[in-house]
Length: 304
Image (tube, rainbow, N blue to C red; front, side):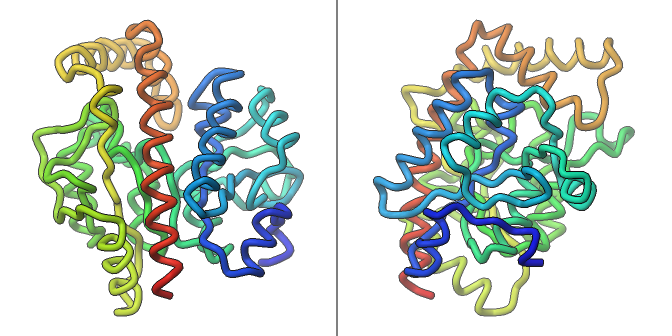
């Protein structure tokens, strides 16, 4: 297994010194944002994590290796490349074997993080059960990964293009705790709340770290969703964003867009219809998640 993993110098040193490390995905760079905002945001997020006393490890598949931590040149190359495959659990073996470029989704980043001994991962929003899944069976592999991989995931809730109610039902079936960070309601990515409650509320990062450590010490396999609402000043109006999502969903259906193409299409359409406001919100929430995630990673590292 180790022959497939390649660590950046910074991550290698962090591992040797026993410093807290925060995993970051690369799909947000290759498929989530346009260039140059993608590379700029990735660098800023990494810096936020360093400023909070942890070490960032952006994960990607390059030249037959799962890279745990990217150099500045690799980040730049990745943000600019147009031949990057979106990599989930099913794609990892193929992309590593064929030495193709792969951007890790939530599921693949969790797998790589666990292989590298990293307990915490920061992202924008998790995938979930898509609207209409009762007929399409379109359920993100992220949910299955949360059930079986020991990595805590800090996010701004589930992406609002999903069926949030069904996503929560699925997570409950799989025994995955959904923790509201400073909130009783599950945030819906662009907005601070939804009509759904979280399982537990935690008001400080130590509480989250203690809960995760107890869960894993008890031998309870799987991660947790740490739902951290977008800052108030960056949130979009619920009625505004929900109307736009509805329009985007209708368009996706009319164009016959299915499977893993749905999320990039919808996010692109939402960005276009919000005149870029959704991209600004996306950047703001990822940075906010990085601040909270780094603090949890530091607390987790202290009570190993």
